[in-house]
Image (cartoon, rainbow, N blue to C red; front, side, top):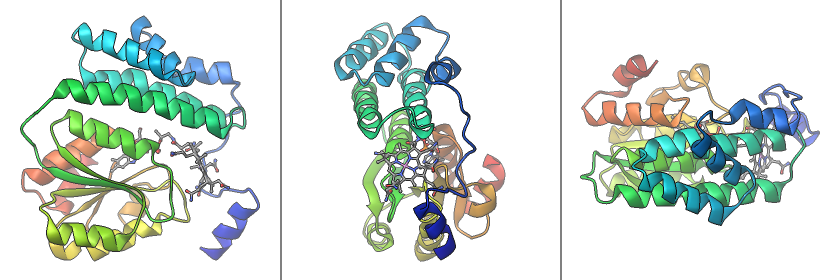
Length: 250
Ligand code: B12
C-alpha cells in the first residue's frame, strides 16, 4: 500500500489503464453515438453546455425516448469522452467538472420523467472513504433509480462506520460501493466485512476494482456497468444471497 502510494506520488499509477494516445477528436469519434439526436446531446456534455444538454434531453423525452437509453447511450458517452481526454492530458479539471454538470442536468430531467414508480427495493450508493471520484457513482445511482429502485445517495469519501449505522437503522437491500483508486479500494473490503452481520451485500464497481479483487473477500459482487448494478439489485431483492448473485452476474 505504502509503495503504491509512493509510486502514485511520483505520478506513476500502477493500476491505471495504459494511455491510448488518441487525439481528442479521435476519442470523441470513438464514443460518439451513431444516432444524430444522441450525438448532439453527447456533444453538449463534452462541451459542458448545461442549458443545451437540458434542452436536448427534454426534446428526446418529449419524443418518448426511454430515459435509461438517454443516460446510457447519449449522456454517458459524453462524460466518458471528456474523462479519457483529461486522462490523456488534453483537458483540464474545470472541463471535467463542467461536463459533469451537463451530465447531471440531463440525468435529473430523465429522473423527473420517471415520476413515482413503486419502489423495487432500497439501495445505498457511495464512493468509498478517501476517494472523491463520484461521476460513475452518480450514473449508477441514476440508472438504479430509472429502474425503479429507491437510492440513498451517501455521496463520496464515505466512512465505513456511516454505512454500518445506515444498515443498522434502515431497511437496505444492497449497498453499491465505488472506488477509482488503488489506494482506496481496500475500503470496499472493509465495508463488505463490516456490514456482513446485516446480510446486506456490497456491489463493487469503479475503475480500480475488478472480479479478481472483489472475489478475494466475502459479501461482495463485482459489477462493471451501471446495468450490472441493476441486475445485482434485482437478484438481491428476489432473495438471492451474495454467492448466488455473484454466479448469476458473472
Ligand atoms: C475525472 C477524474 C478526476 C476528477 C474527479 C471528478 C469527480 N467529481 O468525480 C478530479 C479532477 C477531481 C480527480 C482527482 C484525482 N484523481 Co482522478 N481521475 C479522473 C478520471 C480522468 C476519470 C474518472 C471518471 O469519472 N471516469 C468516468 C466514469 C463514468 O467512470 P467510472 O467512475 O469508472 O464509473 C463507471 C464504471 O466503473 C461503473 N461503476 C462505477 N461505480 C460502480 C459501482 C457499481 C456497483 C457498479 C456495478 C458499477 C460502477 O459505472 C460507471 C459508468 O460506466 C480518471 C482516469 C480514468 N480513465 O478513469 C482519473 C483517476 C481515477 N484519477 C486518479 C488520481 C490519482 C487522482 C488524484 C489523486 C490526482 C491528484 N494527484 O490530486 C485526485 C484524487 C483525489 C481523491 N482523494 O479522490 C488516478 C487513480 C490511479 C489509481 N489507480 O489509483 C486515475 C486513474 C488517473 C490515472 N490515469 O492515473 N480525478
